[in-house]
Amino acid sequence: MIYPLDEQISMALSQAYDPDTGELLEGLSEEELFEEIQRITTDFDTTIDSIASEVKNLTAEAEAVKEEKKKLADRQSKLEARIERTKRLLSFLLQGAAWKNGRHKIGYRKSSVVVIDDEFVEWAEHNAPALLNYKEPEPRKQDIANALKAGFLFDHAHLEQKNNIQIK
Image (cartoon, rainbow, N blue to C red; front, side, top):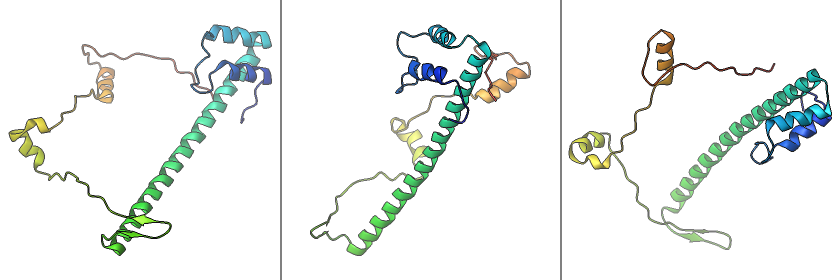
């Protein structure tokens, strides 16, 4: 915990949320949670300060998890590449022959892979369009936002103002 918060408020907050989903426990509303916290302390500033500290602590923990996830994904990627290189070395050494001893058994199984030339899409468009997938068009939200900010009006698109809480 980086930022200290009132221990009773911290306990009330941790007991109010499902540890698996992060959602408020079923049957508990935000109003009821706030009332519970108000029972703990009547000082509004202490309540706000503690809840803001909780947000900062959770944000720091989420960032740490995100960074760890990146490190683990990078580590996994490097290990998988090493596995493939080592398998290629075994294949090169065995030249397709089966091998076994008391600990390992190495064999091969046949598989098929589709290899598609660069010209296939153009050919399929004219000769076999059923072999192609087409993606649905997606709106380019940043371009639409820029146009709306510049004064253009579009049917079915508008800018919406939101208040996003900032805790520093």
